[in-house]
Length: 113
Image (cartoon, rainbow, N blue to C red; front, side):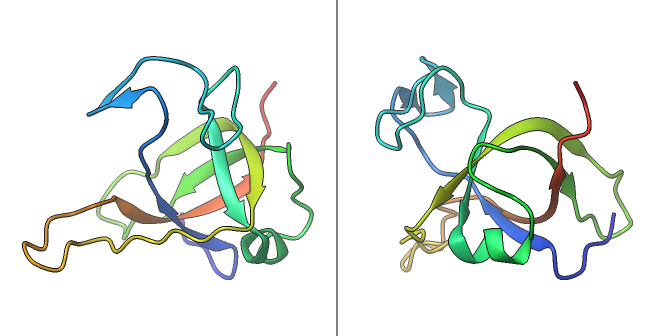
């Protein structure tokens, strides 16, 4: 699926109760998330770009593949508006090791139940 002005950049981050790739709990007290991990944090700028979205809305995330891969959708993520911006580079300065995964996606109101 191609996206225009509604395209956002998704970056993964580590959270509370996460060790390596294993998540041991449903809460992330660092970010005030309790009872579930299906959350997408969006900056105030991103909310403005996606008019109509508000904190707490459920959304579906759509991949912006280059056409050589199948489109993917994950459904039912809760929007949390954040004023903070990520303070990480996608690569370390010395070894150029990835510090986060970064992809472009589209975000739309949740259409499921």
